[in-house]
Picture 1: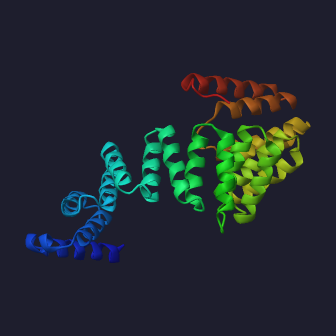
Picture 2 (picture 1 turned 180 degrees about the vertical axis):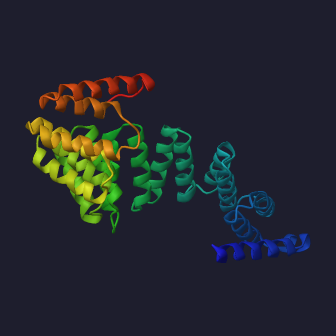
Length: 306
């Protein structure tokens, strides 16, 4: 951090020492390079002035408009960034970076159809680059077009030498949305080969085992999850649910008690679950207390549900 601050200070001093005459004598490429440096240190207004000088000297250079778009993008000015990404594309129709960055910005602005068009174009330009498929897959997933998302996650995996666990996790979630639970399990398996302690993969696979009617396997996963995240109330609750369904009320009660111990905020549905077990164990007075507590919590926060 100290080193970076020193570099930033040195750069600012250097930039201030550049006379207008020296800047005027700089080539467009040099001006653009300085604009990139200023952008890196979040000196956006000076960066804009510098890139505008470069554009003034070479107005048909698409790279300069791309730099200007990035500056506006970093500033959070989406409309201006879109304008200059578009200008960069007009001047450099084969600019993979311009299409991809405009696509990301469109996606962040919830212009999903436009984002898909941009990512598709970036893929046409670089069909072997994993990033284009991953970008489009994420957008399709947000749009709930899970079949298309699965296709693109598959392409991402195919074009990646070192596959990240999140590719498998995301494709698994798409399979879950389509109720293709067996395929989801296989993807979670792959994610866990890459990252054995992946909370998302262990939790996801456990839930799939529940859906597939394999409670024993689900129980193993939830218990393994607690070895990594012992304070996870959801895992305790799921374990309690499995034991309750098996008719083992004692172990179910222990699990729900543990969930209450680690739960940060009081949750009405945990009280409801524990009340149900307490009634099974014949502890009706305690069950009534839990039921009343659940009602009170729901009155305080009526939006809470299971």
